[in-house]
Length: 602
Image (cartoon, rainbow, N blue to C red):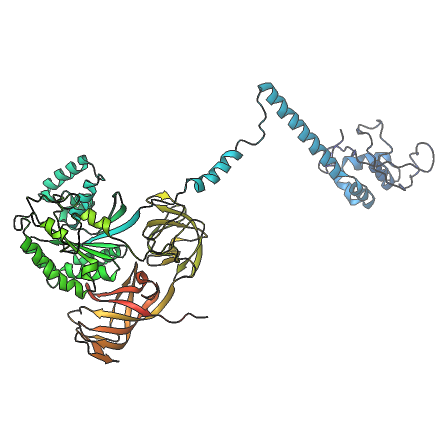
């Protein structure tokens, strides 16, 4: 079988696509006369010709041989030498024209078809020998389709029970971590063997009553010092609702951490120690009871449950007079923080260590006055235990049909950028387009998880993990940003605010334009400067227009400028994005709300 012409080959074989021609004279041409050029080219496949040594027969009808003979003017020996050196043939225009006119591509196609048919024949023969039936579809196709369809099938709308975030706040050593740990133990989220191990570890540290706190305080520094540093997080359920515990640090050095926890909370549980001396220390000036209560209101908790803890202490022994003493001191202060005492504040005596009045009501023999108290609604509650009280609270303002707003609490990389946060409004679903404010970058939601389970939708109140696609990197989703659907929230640097001035640093006793502090709102934290004071209102109601300064106890209308653009809304449009706190030198100096932002640019 003839092959395609290869200029690097050691021998030449004519193409099967070569076209013959007929000379005008009859018979074979002589060696001395030059044959005329071909007059007409016809599509014809000649027989294969082998070139051998001198003396062997040559196909005189081959166009290439005729072209070489024409060039050599009939010298056959020279023609054989030229054909034995194929590289030299392309230098002659007459021979190059013959080579170009040959149908080499057609020959390649025929060879490829033949090779394919042979391979198919071999494949079928092997399968017949092995008695393996030929599948109708490739086996790899089915799994790929199943994998692509599995995520939508497995996604669910999530648990229909309402999800509530509870932050435990209060002074150091009030018993917040112990109460949190006991709640988890009573709801079977911690097994008895683990509790026994914590008891041994606490005994080795000579802190036998700390063993329940070890459930929430997990690192060695917290356990050795008995101080919560980071916000502990855990979950428990009741028959009616789902809860997330946020165990906030009580020490004044870790108030910024407490703010991050309280910013996610729906309900605040203010833990007060009834032990003699401890309540007074936490409530007096400089104690964290006051600051935590103010921050909880500013950060948007809907209810404040005040639990008077350690009622089983030997200095108290479930004494009603001590309980009433603590409640009567707290009422006027909480009212000054902006709480509606009858609607938003509940009071209850408990023992976080023994669990009395937490899941089960305290024995009337130990505390005979409590049943009459809650039956009459004396302390703004008719629920006998902490669990029943939490189940009775109704959350308002959660609109699943509103635009999506998810303040970014943290982010990490796991085959893409994963963002952590709490859904404040709207319903977020995989596949939807969202905008990150204040950068205004748009991304696609590739996945939504609640408690590490993929869901088809996450409603307001859910703690979620959101995977952002579209090239979103870690630097594109910073803590304090807000994930929004259309229309997005505002991104501004200047805002007009109403603030309540609660305290001032020791070295600066007046509040003026140019005052610098830290501005906290939802999960955002920025440096801020007071630009201008518009109005002050004293505690007696006296109003001063365009004042030069303000002092502690006044309400101030002012303009604040942050160092960088921040995502916010006015308090009237979105309360969870319109509340903020001002802090400096380890003190909370003011709480406030945004009343006006610059108009949108067209």
